[in-house]
Image (cartoon, rainbow, N blue to C red; front, side, top):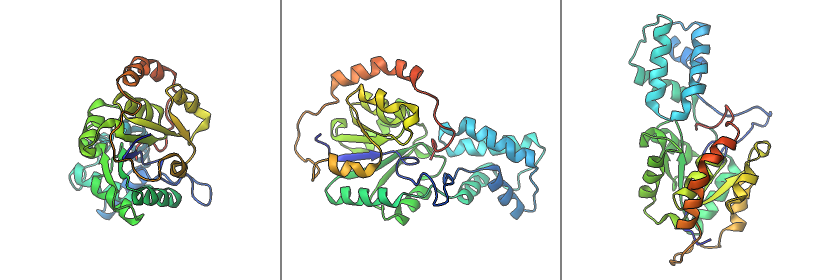
Length: 275
């Protein structure tokens, strides 16, 4: 495939899936983090309030906006009669900072560094409650400072909304046929990018969901880890222009079947969707 720009999802695609002890390493903001922040201001948080925040976050995190977290904090505290010591937006920022970011998989980081040295431009496109500054800091610490992050928290809309991908295309500054989108979610990272004219690659981190079979119906590349892209992509990013697959015919076919795919795909895991 003739591409010069690679776009990756973040959590579940480029991050560690489990720690050395076998525990999940997703670092979503929780009621426990809120408890720690409020304690610094001498404010107690009932256990039930912490549980309520966790339940609400699981339902609303797919909006991928920092304002959602502030709203959830404000509503949770109000429901339990707690007056926040600082404004909700500042409180949300402190809670998200306390939670930290998902750790990058060293093998994935090494792969992206090699692809970058081969001339590929690389972007991150992810739904996230974290700010671009926080995510950029995570990338810098992993040796990936050359990556441009495109986050729902800054765009103002999340995958799979059309406006998110349009913003991504504008940021990339290249034709969609020259872009490859790789991620572990069938709808957000495969079907939606295909419908916008990009190539797509499913990183099948959850074989039990049966996403690989559905992705292959659209002639999509399916891999188990991003390191496999080193063998699939050309040795150097292809600079010349040539019609690549994913043109109008593919776009129409994907859009025509997108609704069916929504009905068939199992609901996403409660972990790792928002990153």
